[in-house]
Length: 281
Image (tube, rainbow, N blue to C red):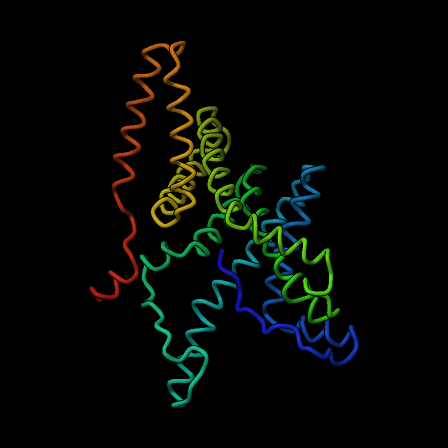
C-alpha cells in the first residue's frame, strides 16, 4: 500500500533530548498515519483473543484514520501545494508533477480509496472477523518500517547499522513485504468465499456486503498483480483437486462451467489506465 512521504534519514548528530525529538516527530502528519496503523495492529491482536466488538470497531476507525491521511495527501495536500506554488511562480517538491484530473475512473483505480471505502463498509455492517486480516498485514509492515526508518533512528539514534535487532526487523520487512501482498490477495479470495456462504445462509446485510466486496475484488483484480496471482494460484489448486478421478463428472462439469464464466467476466474492464484517460480528456 502507498505510504506517506518518506522522512529524511536520521541526523548524524541527535539534537535535543529524547522527549524533544519525540514531540517534534509527533507534529508530522506521517506520525499520525503511523499511529493509525499502530491502533489497527494492536486492536487486531487484542480482538484475536477477545472477539470484542468494540475493539473490532476501533480497529476500523484506525484503518479509516491511516488510509484517510493518505487520501488527504494525494487529493488535497499535494494538489493544493502544487497550485500554490504555480500561483506564486515558485518551485516546490511537486513542481513538474502531473496530478490526474479527478474523475470516477481515477478514484476506482486508487487502491487507497478502495480500501478506505471498504473499511467504512466493514465498520457499519455486522462483524466479520476475517475482514481484519488484510488490514492487519498492511499495518504490521507499515508499523515495522516506520519504527526502523523513522522513529528509532530519529528519536533514539538506533538503526540497523548499530543494532542487530533493528537489522533483523529490516531483513524481515525486506524479505516478506512482497509476499505479504500475495497473502493479502489470497485472504481476500477466502473472504469472498465465506461471504458467499453467509449470503446463502441469509446473514443480516450479507448480500449487500457480498456484492460490495465482489465489486471491490473485481477492481483489485484489474489493477493488482498480487490479486491476479492469487486467483491464478487458486485456479491451479482447484484444477488439481477437480481433476482427481474420485470427483463425480457432474461436479467437474459444474466447476468447468463456473470457471469459464469467471474467466469471461474477468475480460470486462470496469477501469481504464489513467494515462489513457489523460489522452481522451
